[in-house]
Image (cartoon, rainbow, N blue to C red; front, side, top):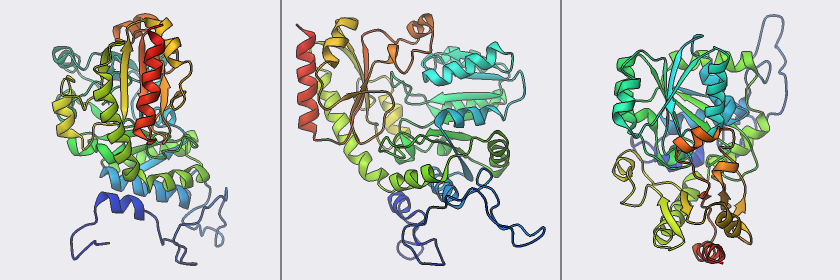
Length: 390
């Protein structure tokens, strides 16, 4: 397909057009949903392209092709959840292999890696990726996998993917990037040296908080093939209906991100001068430690803002009580705005010493900024901040 002459279509166009008019039988513009669990053979020993939906499904394949295209990968595997995607990647490693991961990675990732280590399946070393000497020391010895989360959850620390990938190569490690916070609309890690990209498609890719799903995109077919084998063997493949909804959400990804990003930038600039707040984390602020790296390797600064209230848990409770346009809920990336308290919600699975080491204080809140009217969101936050002073 060409936009004009030999010029390839823009990524925004490819996201919208993914899978359209792919049904040659009816000419349907929107591809049909294939809910069938199984597919008939033509005859003895004559299997069609599909036989059983756990192994392959036309609807799921449209989503995987679209994500592989947007990330610039050789292929993608769609899983039933983001944690399913992380679990799938782990199957590429041999027993006893060593993973180097951020000390402030997503709570579910930390829980899974720690559980693998306790059972003797894998070794996990959690490192402050903002501390270059610590990262170099961790990668100064052999490793099987380096796990990158950029921006990190929830303190939005930025990791230079290309720099860490270079160190990882020397250690013999695969480079995996969790791109959930940005989606391929704002960042394509494979362009910067990653081998694999992981998503919770529940978030920005679907964008409507009504589907749980995940994806792994591989840079090469050599990595893609074992992922497909393990997804089938483990039964972690995503459902057709979920894939259908996620593909529908993907078509509006770039339009949604434009509003998400504008709202987040404006709110971050406003929050940083509010007296009730001691600190704001948002990569779009020039004072953010990772601002320059983010500007270089991302095409947008995201729509997650974290900030610390001066009054700790009592202030958090007063701030949350009465919010109208920020729902107190986990997850992120939907069109609606959310507020989360990491210490008691998303990162509750981490033990307290680990949370402290990662900088997750009791007064920390994380906003997932939606696409509502900016004026309403700012007024809602202003009223919440007033309550913290009472």
